Length: 342
Image 1 (cartoon, helix red, strand yellow):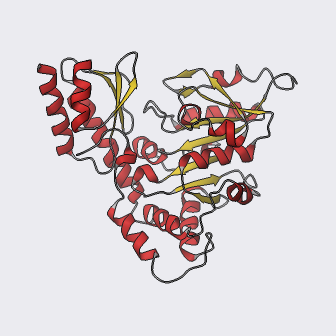
Image 2: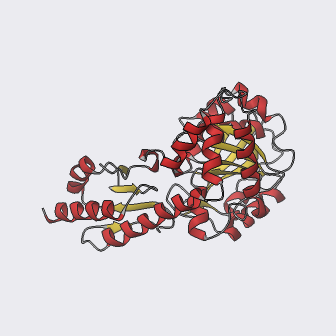
Image 3: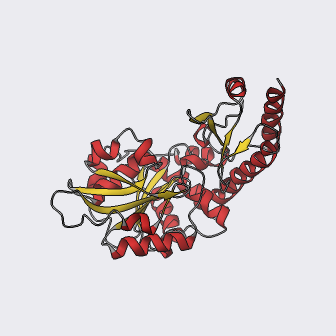
């Protein structure tokens, strides 16, 4: 069985698993004060800048929520896309744990625009309204689209002029960088992003996320927020080991992301040629959104699990991963073609 529901369905990359096993040798200092985490932090600094402050975390939801909690007070709000993971798929964690209000901005294919930000900042200083403090963007977006470097720069310029910080949900940042053929730093630090959650789990890791503060001093005291947020793992070396292997000179992060992206492009190309299949969004990374006849959905899901994205329109989402092969794509499309004939 090859799943197309999420890149989270994919197992752990063998090289990552080997790194975890290697980190299991002997005893080490706990809570991240070990040499494995130190080496991983240095690699993250090479990718994002030497002034970056790195904090390893177990899940993406926790990373996003605790970052936003750290950046805000109870009267603050966060401007985000209505489609964003923090708004739709984190079970109200930003509201419950961080105690903040989320304000959806107008978007273009799930991407926030500078004008969308400006429209929501007129309440600044008005005591009856929550006060915007952060703009949160997702790279790549929940619809599989990508912000260009210039688009991120424009968002950061607008946000900073309004006195707002910029947070990036980077669960699939590796896929974005691979697709755009730019470095992780070009999409973040150099573009003006202040802080991001950097994901490893969707790109071959077992459970490895990181809060990476890019603006000097912004991460001060975050260690206490992480501890209160129950994310200070005692055996943190196993998270560090995953990032160390993912980001070392072999560039596994890039290889994995490129493979996932290539397979999504191939899936869209082949499925899109079938009568009865409509590709609904640009395929820019490792997600394909499509509308197929309702009769095909359940039988196809039995062999290849995937999500229905929009019940009203019948839109579905197909995600590829580093483990997806051309044979998987051929099998999927072949099965879909047979169902379309019935």
